[in-house]
Length: 148
Length: 264
Image 1 (cartoon, each protein chain N blue to C red):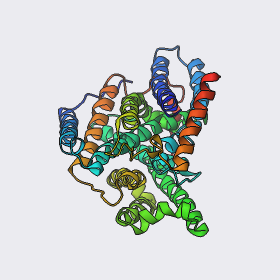
Image 2: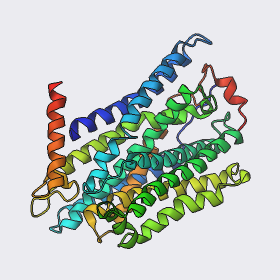
Image 3: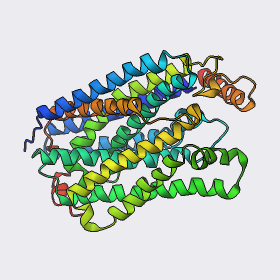
Image 4: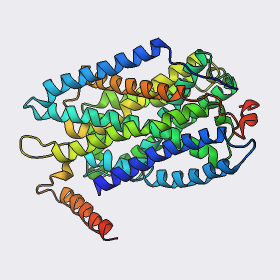
């Protein structure tokens, strides 16, 4: 049985228009939010990117989870639309790449006017004991991890 | 720690996503009724669930989301984000299945399969609410300032509108609309609810992330909506391209007969 899916022109155009709008919003965000001297606007620029990339990575990964759970339980009902979950799962890498690059850019490059990272505050702990503790814990674990 | 964990977790997810699809395609050219690949998928599923339980279900959201407010902690936070992601992921699968059926593909999928997908959306909305309540109620009851700071900002502060609409969209609407059997077998209702649930959980993630960095200055404006649309565009573009590459019927899958006769 062969059941091929051809992308209709409308779907392709819709997706390209949506990507275009996203790129336009990103460029607008870079020029008006990231370039501004307002710390909240710059935090907003990164936080929104973080929000969407985390959200889309997690919901696409769920497809892999659904397949794995069904396979482990010998579930058969999923097989009828298995190609859909596979296609979503096979594209996790795109969102994972976006998420990783955004996380690392926030951690390593984002600082406000006073040199604080206002999204991940533990990156620049200052005098705060808990932030310092979180940073120190992660350092310790990292040393442990490397020594293994 | 943060960097290595992020790279390992995301890398493993991406690898398993690729691997499951590759194995399923390999099954098409395997000898008929050969169960070798089937058991390989079975074993790797166990490995994936182990990886997934140690990343998404327990640690990854701590690092990526909960560490935005490091003074506050909740031990079931990752499980809560998993529930949130699971309902929206199920809704996403359902939207694709409905779309493909409307195009005349996926002839094997019947109302019975749609009913089961609808059940997942319904049941896990309730599961999400259970975790939401478990997190909220214990913090409210204990009333420790370290912990209540999280909900004070969200429930009584500038985010109260998102806080309450989150609860209404993700609990009240699914339980009322998806409760009845006919509504889960109606293509319009399930599609509508899938979109509502994805939007609702997008809001849920919004109220998890934004109060830390932005405080009272939150917006849902051209930038937020534009970036969201961009991600939807990437999703539609990439998934539809992947779907064209193989037959939508997993030929030679040894459970094919069972799925055709499936009754919900």
